[in-house]
Length: 300
Image (tube, helix red, strand yellow):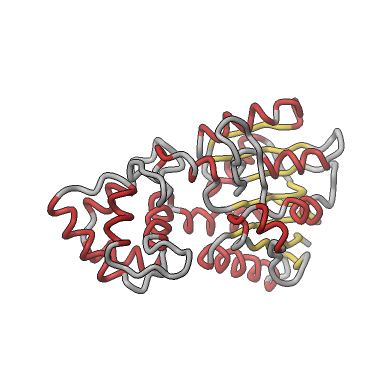
């Protein structure tokens, strides 16, 4: 996702922007979908590369992101439209919109700085806010519900599977002991609980894997990704390209495996072997890009 540089203006730093636009847009006259519209940085660049006939549909779970990106992209008029929705339902959304077959589809995964930099959204370890972590405010599941209501065994499994956290057993017991004294309500409380007990490794906060696991669980990110990627192929035309940017190993594993299955079945070819990663210059400008990996396939 893109990095928001200021609370006052939408100054984007979309990850791997040049690479995405060059590899994704093979047909500037076609239909494109940005399945994770965010603040519209990638969508703006793609639209700028399209001909007057080319169009783009943006989808996002976050109503706030949709409102901001829709304002940003209003200058493109009828060539752009935005829809609130979950990309796990991408085939249904595209069918309802009559927006297919596609020349390109982009999945820019993870959470954007619109969410990370706003304390009230509850995503950030370093910003005091409620334990929320929902991309869609209508979602009934919050991080607070998980840490305060789920049994220790379920929290342990969650941390191990979604956070790849080696200390999942101890952390789940600490959480349960803490909530028995008083419910955990804020990001600061949870971060402090773990930082007091776990050693810090370099610049990585001890609560990082726990926060990642909670966020993934709250938003159903891995299941959504598997379903969205699996369904998008049927919406592509021959020569249409699918690009996905992942930010951690769990996402990248799903992207790689789904794309490999497309290629193995004879339905796609790799546009580029292996993953593209940001260079040192981009990472220096935007440290949040450091773990990004871009993979692209083309439908045959």
